[in-house]
Structures are given as C-alpha cells and as structure tokens.
Image (cartoon, rainbow, N blue to C red; front, side):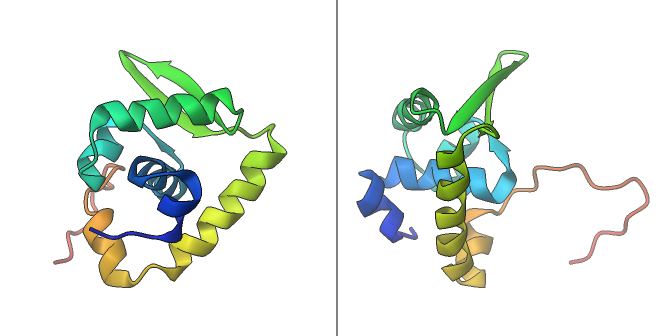
Amino acid sequence: MISTALADLFGGRAAEAVLLHLFHYGETYGRAVSRDFAVSLDSVQRQLDRFERAGTLVCKRQGQMLIYSWNPKSRLATRLRELIGVVHEGLSAEAKESIFLQRRQPRAKDKPVIR
C-alpha cells in the first residue's frame, strides 16, 4: 500500500488515510476510508473524532452515517488542506488510481461509459 510522510507526521496510517481521502473527495465517512485504504474501521473512526475535536473537521449526520468535511471556519483546516494538497499532488497517477478506485458521484444520465 502507498505510504507518505503524512503517516509519520500525524502518527499512523489511519490519519494519513483520513486526510488523503478527505482531500480527494471533499467529504467522507469512516467505512469508505477503511475500505479504500485497508485500515481498520475503529482506527479510522478514532482519527476522525480526533480531527473533529481539534476543530479541523466538522461532522453532519446523514441517515445513520456521519459525514465528515473540512471545517470552513478553521484557519488551521485551511492550512492543513494546503499541506495535504502538496502530498496529494506528489502521488503518482497509478497510486491515485489504486487508492481512489471507487466512484463516489453518480454518473450523468446520458453520459457514455469510457473504458
């Protein structure tokens, strides 16, 4: 699996996974991060809680899911997002394809599927 400096900076693969997933999709939930990065759901949820307590993420309930996104009122979240952007840009195209494999947005009704 892909490993970046984020794992060393933030103390583990779960933090790295949460930050990269959130940067790529804009919002996320625990099970999606866990599935895409093959990290335990419990460790992902702990990281999401830590980032929320720190004020960098905000959470909203959608049905039974908790959806996390960047806190628009936090200056720290803005700076953190810039840092994650630098790491995200440094990932190779192959790495991005292997990590962010699943489509999160529905395809437009008449849009053709390109394979």
